[in-house]
Amino acid sequence: MTERVPVRDDLVDVEPYGAPQLDVPVRLNTNETATPPPEGYLEEVARRIQGLGLHRYPDRPHTALREALARRHGLTPDRIWAANGSNEILLQLLLAYGGPGRLVLSPRPGYAMYPELCRTALTDHVEVDLDERFELSPDVAGAAVARHDPDIVLVPSPNNPVGVAVDHDAIRALHHAGHALVVVDEAYVEFAPDGTSVMGLLEELPRLVVVRTFSKAFRLAGLRLGYLAGPSWVVDDVQKVRLPYHLDALTQVAGLVALEQEAAFLDHRELVASERDRLTTALASFDGLEVFDSTANFILVRSTIEGLFDRLLEHDVLVRDFSDRPRLQGCVRVTIGTPEENDRFVAALRAVTDES
Ligand SMILES: Cc1ncc(COP(=O)(O)O)c(C=O)c1O
Image 1 (cartoon, rainbow, N blue to C red):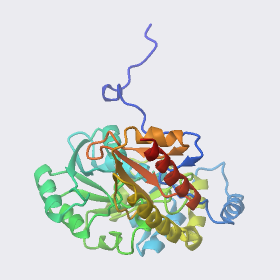
Image 2 (image 1 turned 180 degrees about the horizontal axis):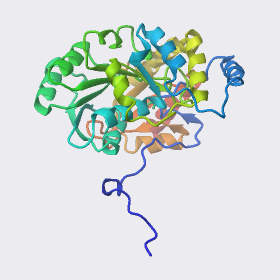
Image 3 (image 1 turned 120 degrees about the vertical axis):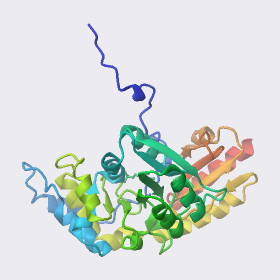
Image 4 (image 1 turned 90 degrees about the vertical axis):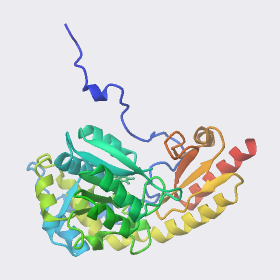
């Protein structure tokens, strides 16, 4: 008797994706916000969920949440769609517009989940190299689209893990050089200077989709809530691949309350920006360390120290290791934490450099 069913051929050697979740005193590896949601938030959510009839399925089109998000962006609700984190939004887009015979183009370096999502959705994937400053010029962007003729272009802006935002003219070039759905993944945009978002280009670029998350600046990574803003036909199409009732009633309420308290939720961003500047300056003072300017809540650092990730871990600091990734040799990414956590990171780095 055969006891085991073979997994899909392309999954045989696959390791489940995910940064290590280690129980370490200083965890700066997954780009969450270090400070919890504002005071009173959980109390209000607790109050509001009393009225939910959990014996019934949730509101499938999550109408109230979409209306609130639509108001936030000056759009109509038929142009908004939410799901369990922006990763689920990206997967739904790939299921709807990718698939066998279709192609995704994304920048390299880029968000490490994109190849995983493409594989899951049985979609081919090619990358276009960012330049040495991790920027994408409109010329390179347009040429890559003209050459590969992708069906979907996936662009993280600001980019994870490099922290650089993509120029609006490069987005225009990606859009105009072909016929692709251009998906700009703005997971970190609330940390970037005003004007970074391409939300304002939605009217100009008819195949543009903007993806956002509550996991980063909105301090709700534990909630699993993300959304897209785009043309209404995209919202119609993703509903063909979504699971019924995919967004549970508790998440819908928790998201609504967060939007009502938006100002309090986002008021930590000045601290993140000043800590990012402080950390960038501190890191720049280390010999042999290359520090990349970031507009997000993390910083990419390149070093010649062998095994930097493990050695920081020995000093109780967990960062994200990218040292064996193409274009990122020797790099680790550190999330901006509390001032104390950032100090501990710098002290650990100092100790590791002194030992080297
Ligand atoms: C660029 C980018 N996009 C999307 C996500 C996914 O975020 P979530 O699924 O938590 O919304 C992340 C998370 O790290 C990210 O870095």
